[in-house]
Length: 222
Image: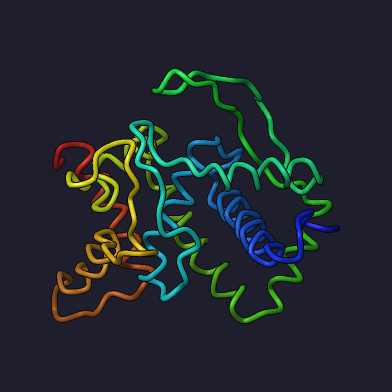
């Protein structure tokens, strides 16, 4: 099954993005987060970008437009639509809703079509770098699963990068392209110093500690 339908110039980048999306949805399903609503998927994708350095993983998208309604990647949404179109993903509860800027956007929830996706995942698992990606996204999915749907929808209001007061809404957040102001990764790495007895937190623990920190902040410190 072909995952791309673009020119040779950008087909490699498109393939990487779409393969990563397959792993995101797969990890969400294993963590009990499926079917994964569109906005939760975009939040997952955002967190995977800002927390990638904690796992020593490359950032897929290092900037995005800061929206009041939370992260939304138009290119990612196009890739999702393509995965649905070729049968790798399935969307349910499809509808349209007005966003905070009074514009219509697609609403729905995603699962993988295992008839096709399992073969893709099995092939990806034969590569070392892809296995590292599996591990990172799976650990992030498990950390996200500790949040309620309401908490997940509010994570970026407390996230160190997205809530940066210096960047106003409708402006670009750049944390890994032209600039390197990834306050989220810095905050997650800081937790390494807070464990008792001089214990050093590993990458998985830092991700879980950061998501727990967001939950505490969402609930006013309680």
